[in-house]
Image 1 (cartoon, one colour):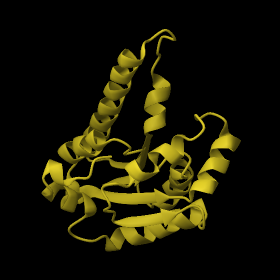
Image 2 (image 1 turned 30 degrees about the horizontal axis):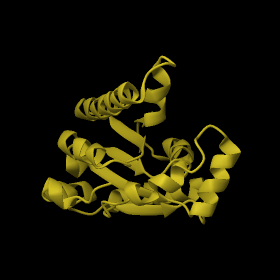
Image 3 (image 1 turned 135 degrees about the vertical axis):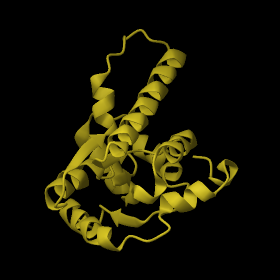
Length: 185
């Protein structure tokens, strides 16, 4: 199974994942996209075009690592930002859609902005720029709002949802859409 947490930067995905891992009752690998970015070295003088290419290759490698772990029979908890349409299309092509639980992680903009200021490790306004794009596809199996619900309560809600997940899953429904039918992010 792939539990796929999708939300803007600072929406609470990592906090939910941290609370969810110990209560799942099975072996899971936590694979946050930020961990893949942290493994990469990037020369400081890299131009914007080359940087964009490096970032895209990082995301593509991340998707393939998740797919490989799941294909080997591992449960995976993914923390990601589907802020570009191609990322969702790539995941739809790689993951077994029946095995994906797509979780929308939302948070009101004022709280996102507060969290960004507090963190200090993200460009100001990043979450605001991502908001419409991240959720553009519009389909989830379950959603959480970390502006009104604690990370632990979101984690418990996801855990309790897993035995009752719908068929078809959100990923199965998205996979049935033609690529042009998936809204641009």
